[in-house]
Structures are given as structure tokens and as C-alpha cells.
Image 1 (tube, rainbow over the protein chains, first blue to last red):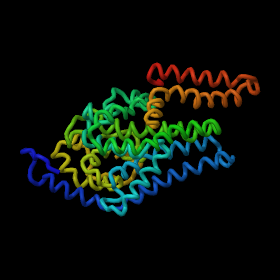
Image 2 (spheres, one colour):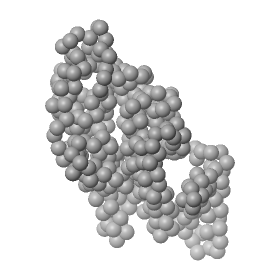
Image 3 (cartoon, chains in turn orange, yellow):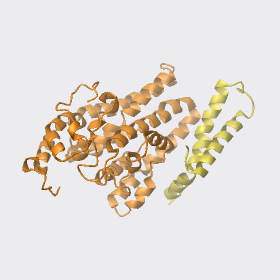
Image 4 (spheres, rainbow over the protein chains, first blue to last red):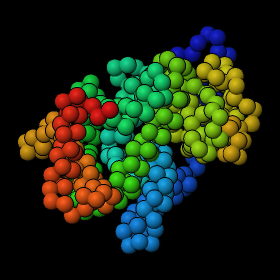
Length: 299
Length: 65
């Protein structure tokens, strides 16, 4: 990647050095994410026979399904970046497998999320081309929640139009159509047979998971940021222990180096902190010297 | 072509069908389970009618909320 160096940046903080350090954190096999992605989908699926046969109360099932939905996106996100196969063509099936399976809980087609997420990285905070712009630049978290519940943040038609000359983008959309139709039709069939179970095991958990994902993965990390590699995502803190928001305070390192695995981000941030300060990443001066692994501590 | 027609229809009328089928089924189940209307004739007409009405209003407004 070509990057014009600013004259203010000293040679010790060059992009090449930063990239080399980041690369050293981008090699580990992301087994935890695979376990979470496939595990939550398996648990969610098992709720149906357990609830329908009376082994589990529907409200308990609803709580578990909602938790599953909150854990559903991140394993797919790693797959979208090819962080399971890590460039090995023989392992690409693993990206697809985890990417598709984990999103069943959220009722989203993997192909569409993958291609729109790639555009989000390429055009972060661009009002015309960033598919996440509406979420990240809303005026309040309540409006984000309302828009997600309403479904009005999913302007797929708009981005199909914006990127109509991008063959890979259009093809991915077309690939996703059968799965998208399935996710539209399946709840409408299930609700006829099992109305309350469909509402409380799939439809509402998917909404809760979508709200959670949008607020913590899209809104907070990009709130008040501008365009540019080192300016489009920020370091932020929150009253909530990191465990509950998937450590999204550290999301800026993902935007700088998407191949770093999620659970390797804290160590990568510690190593790259001087680079982030030198590059004036928003909030970088507040990054602690040691990012604790204890997820019950805020940061 | 057929797929394109289906997608256009869903895009235009998806909210109405969701209201009629999804909300209608839920309202019907709620009326049957939690009210004294259980067993009353035409309960389903009210339930599915209400679902369709909400879906139609959402279609006209272009948004659910």
C-alpha cells in the first residue's frame, strides 16, 4: 500500500515499520472466533427443539437467543477479512463456512455484509460511498437504535447504484439473493406454525443483535471522526466493561490493520501506541500503556 | 426475470406482506391465547386485518417507526 509520509512523522514511525509490527500480530489462527461463531449458531439452533418440546421455557430461550445474536457478527467479520484462511486458498472454505453459519442468528446474507464492509473500509466516513455512514454519523444513539429497528439503515439499493460499475460488488449482491430471500421467507413460514417461538427465538433476538452490533461496532468507534487513514476511527472509553461491547474501544486498530485478529488487538495496540500518537489517531494519547486482558475492566 | 419481479415486489410490498403474515399470525396467537376471544368466530379476521393495516401504513409511510 502506497502511503504518502508526512514531513512531521519521524522515520522511526514510518508506515513500513508500523506495518511490520502489525504483521507480527496477524499470523495466529483465530480458533476462538470459529468456536464462538459456530458455537453460538449451534446453541441458537438447539433452542428450537428444546423450547418446542417443553424442555426450556420460551423466555429463557429468548434470553439465550438474544445473547447468541449479540455474539453472531464478530466471527463473520473476521471471515469477511479472510482472517481464518490468512491468504491460504485451501482454507478459504473456512471463511465462508463461519461467515455464513454465524449470521443465521442475525438473518443477514454473508455476501452482502462482506462486500459492504469492504466498501466501509475503503471509504470510511464518505457520506456517499460508506455504507455505514448513516449509522456512524447519526445525531444520537437513540436515533441509531430507531433506524436499525426500522430497517432503514440497510440502504442496499442505494449502494448497488453507487457501485454499479464495480463488478465484484454487483456479483456479490447477486450471489446473496437466494440467501436474502430465504431469510425473508423463513420467518414468514415459521410464524404460521410457531408464532411466539418465531418472535422470541429469531425475530426479536435478531433485532437486538443488530442494534447491539450497530451501536457498538459502527456508531461509537466512528462518532465525530473524519476521513483519512489515521482519522476515521477513534479510541474511546465507556462505562461498560469491555466484555460487554466486544472491546470495540479498540476498533481503530482494526481499521488500520484489518488482518490483526480480534483477540490479538490489545497486544498490537500496546506495541503500536507510539505510532498511533505520532499519527494523531483520535484519542490515542489516552490509550493505557498496558491494555489489560481482564475483560471486566473498562480498558 | 422472475427473480427480478419477485425482488421488485418484495421491495414495494414487503412491509404489507410482513404485516399481514407475520404480525397477523402473532395477533391471532395473542388473541387466542390471552383473551376471552378464544374460540370466537372471526377472531382471525380482526388479527390479520390489523396486521395488514399496520403493514399497509408502513408501506405508505416508507418506514415502520
